[in-house]
Amino acid sequence: MVKDDVYQRIRERTGSMSRAQKKIAAYIEHHPDAAPFLTAAKLAEKAGVGEATVVRFAVMLGFSGYTQMQQRLQEEMRQRVTTVERLDLAEDVYPEESRMAFEVMQDDMNNLQQTLNRLDAATFAEAVRRICGAREIKVVAFRSSHSLGYFLTFYLHLLLQNTELIDNSDTMFERLAGLEEEDLLIGIGFPRYTARTLQALQFSRSRGVPTLALTDSGASPLAGETDLCLFASSRLPSFVDSFTAPLSLVNGLLTAVGQTVKEQASQRLSKMEELWESEGIYHPGGE
Image (cartoon, rainbow, N blue to C red; front, side):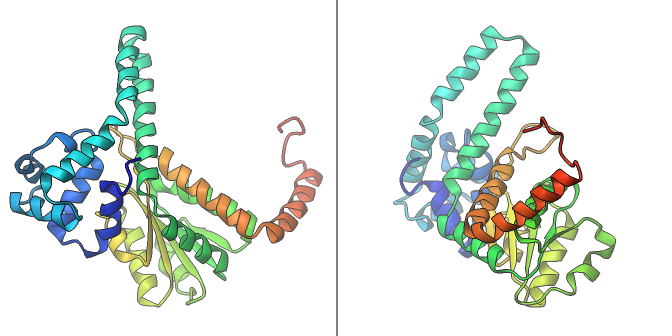
């Protein structure tokens, strides 16, 4: 990763950006292969803003101008050249159906790299601290994001025994109403964002409940309605969402939480293992 890269600067300054600047940031984040080669005028056209706004955006990020920011984006782009070459090779060696699998996996690897580039260590550590310190945790994740919410809730509850997934939007507010300042709401949402997840964050914040969001970028509506936000890229040129990077981020959270509460978690898991064995939950040859 290029030191102090464009994505890191965007992440650090998202909170103070204007609406127009957030449009530029979102376009750069969602088009990492195209953005480095666009002129200021073309980037402005793609993002739906004025050219002068693009130039001011670059200066706001700490660059001398748009040219320097573009050069930095191109440096980061060069780090992925070898992967593009592998894709070209796949076109010659594999049939079209097989190439599709390679292309999707390559997009997933790019999403992982972008997520790694944008991950803020201090924000991640604070998220772990809040999860470990919460009395009660509710997770809101609807539609396709439900899979991430279920996975996170399953393991957090094993570790902490205080986590519940809200999977019914009709009773959502009733189940959120009991949360207080020592609790935590985790909202998970990726395009297309569900209105209910956004409403859950807004409702909880209005009642003084700490919130944590997992979403794709600073331009996400969830990012503006939470106390703390972690980003994972989910871009995929398909009708399905790519949750490879978001799931990796969730795995990172779970691992860090497990290390933080290692002693308590070990005791709980030992008891669970005894229960699982006595009830025959897992097949004896499944390890």
